[in-house]
Length: 235
Image (cartoon, rainbow, N blue to C red; front, side):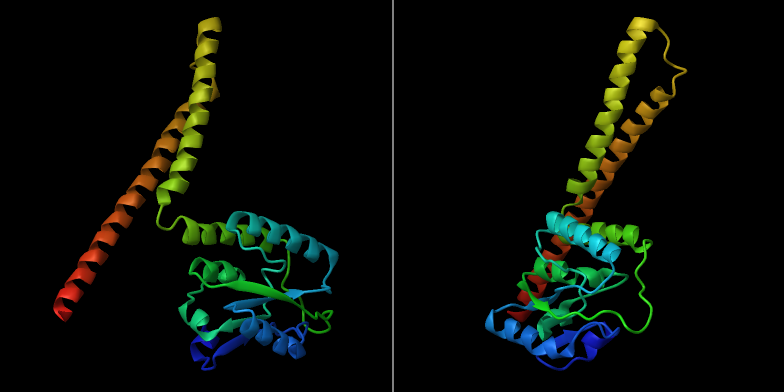
């Protein structure tokens, strides 16, 4: 973010500092950005000179991300990218959201593409890759999905979770009701507590989504009133 804020050119290039990216590929990124009318060009390390386990996880990560977001890139996490300046000036990144810049930009209406770039084996430094990053990566993916798809419709995500959880609780309750009619008392069964708990949780999830919709609706009304007042002041 500090680099993006300080950049003054029309095109901004980012690349990793481990010397695996090849600076001689920069003209290829710039050419694709200019000639193909893209706003972001992401590098596709091909062939990739990384260990097998890292390539396997990257493949799964890219496929899952593409499935949920609709942004089809072979190497989403590649740090070798070219951007138009107006794109990076609108980005707000925190945590590990830099891995999802193409998704965040795509959501804002920018056009994202990719080109193959030369990749070198690591010769210096130590890789930060590890299995601890796997759950963090998918939590970040959930964050990005919420920010891009559900930020203005929280009921869709919380309501869906609530309905599913409550429905499972009702099914368990129906099963216990049938069991009670056939065998008698079921009050001592842990499933009864689980059923009640899931129904309550489902209602709570749905209520959170509904409250989120109310908050967003209130904010939208306030924004419209502010805009109307500004227009009146200008006239």
